[in-house]
Amino acid sequence: MFPRDKKGLHWQCLEVRHCSQETICIWVRDPKIQKEDWHSYLDYEICIHTNSMCFTMKTSRVRRRFREFVWLRQKLQSNAVLIELPELPPKTPFFNISNAQTVEQRIRGLQEFLNKVVQCPLLLSDSRLHLFLQTQLAPEEIEACVSGQTKYSVADAIHKFAKSNRRFPEEEEEQTSCNVAPESSSVLGHPIDASFLRGCKPSKEQGDAWTTVLAPSPSK
Image (cartoon, rainbow, N blue to C red; front, side, top):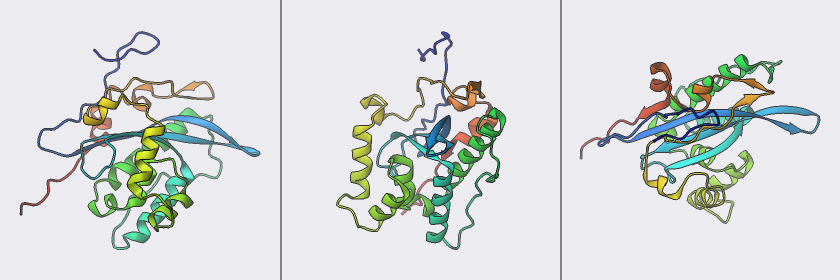
């Protein structure tokens, strides 16, 4: 039985379990307005469910803002100069955080970016990407950790964050299904495409974008 939302509706998330394949279920959702000094900005929740050996934790949730995505792309590009990285959604000078359609378009673009990034083995091996996706470390803290300037390793940082911020039942660490209870997703009271942002009942087009099936390792 799938979880019910406050209206008593059932929500079913995308099933990504494959017996012989490594998969990554990754999506961006739940935009929230944050205050910083004299202005406001949006951050977004990044959810991951995976059975891939590349990830330290099999389930995780973090929140990131757009400029952190920009930082990540720049760092990934500097570490893989021969690879053409996917583009982020365009940065508009007058981005309206109260416009639900504009916000949803950005969310879709961020999700497409991450799904394309994890399809590349070289990018997937970059520790910055894993710290970005599975910890709440700031960019400068990520860089310090990757450079060996911290007392904790990359794996230590991910485990510490997971322990302090667990929002999934512990047994779900061993699962790769996306049966996650939905949460409210809105910007300034304007509802956004609930089926997309909550990670539930995706269309075929959304489903194709949500799940990355990693290529099998070459036979030795």
